[in-house]
Length: 580
Image (cartoon, rainbow, N blue to C red; front, side, top):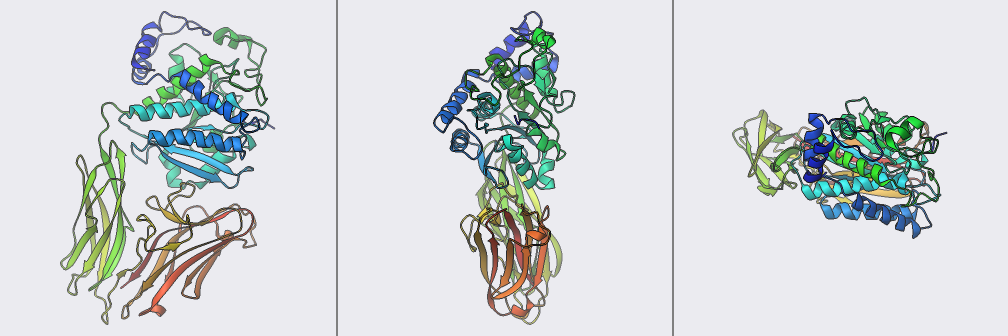
């Protein structure tokens, strides 16, 4: 924390003894509520021995890297590598997001279990960095290890999911919540809306610990409180941690938050010692931000109850009953297009596995007018893959605007999406349509020519549609990135419109100097120049008339040039060149 300026057998035993047993270090237990009993029966027991094994690894990493795991250090990088390796082996979709605005630039680690609806996300986070003074095993190896073991158990059990579960390990918390702030700031308003709750775990194994819950009376806190209430623990509001850990970054963005903590430098009261055990008049963690914050600085009972409470919350919030049903989503990008008689246009059809296992999805289309054919290449994909939709119009095709229904048929589900098609008459032998290939970047790099890493699904910047986009610059150091594609514009058409969606994110604070620039060119002619002065949230569509290039083959090119400090990201998506 930043310094301020149950297996079934265990769950059955727990429910059976709550009304009669007194647990070590607590007051006599009160009877568990029916919802608490149901969740205790469903949620797995998280092995505290396994959590401690992760803590031992963090301690060893610190010992091998100067005694700490501070953000930006070799110890922090090794911690990221350890957690990432475990998650990838378990089947998570794992992304390293470089926090370019952090005091010590380093990676946030984001891991998503690829089941459940993508627009219904429950997020669990903990900061992975320590202070420079020590290995940071309670602060915050305890929260990090707790989430890692919960993530591994979720993957091993692979239950049916009613929501998407996303885990995060933050960089730069000790320097002012920098990693989580950066992550939240990179989310679009739509992506923020997908997150139905963020749960933070910071110092959950304090040796003289208490039982604290962030926003304890909120609906978001209810599952965390229900689990601890089942022990008669009588948890309290986490007043010490208010505004001092990563939940604050999410709360400031309007996202509902809660979480567990066991206390830092504040002093345990006599009343707290009476109900929880421990020493009154002493700090919850006497080794807070000190070199003695090692594996010996952990209260195993508090750590165990925290880890099991996380599992309880995951199962209560996001896990359904029974075997996961195989399901998938279907989308088309762009969602509309224009084709002239005698011409063709393309779009990208994307699929994703939303629950259960991947399945073969067969693609078909309906609603095309007379003289128009719709094809797919390939005609079937494994969910998670994409195909190119090609619309071709004959010389006698019916003109007008039509809704094409794209249908994906899988083994256990059928999904549809819509594509709006406009057919024009053309003129002077015009062969029109949408000329840009792979304009949404979902089908790899072909036919684009781009600098290494520009076409990416890195979650550090959101795509406008789908998962991929072209991300130029954003490194905070001197760099030039390019993106280009050559196209042939037919003669004899009435309109030639280049359009693309652009998002500019920048750490520059000036309102007068263009330090970082994006130039848009057709051939050697500059169409527009954008810079850090144009930074804004979300995407803005930019369009240009290319009628002057009719009958020519030209190269469309975007060049991003970044200076030596303070990142500016130029993010491009959904590029089209409509001719008709």
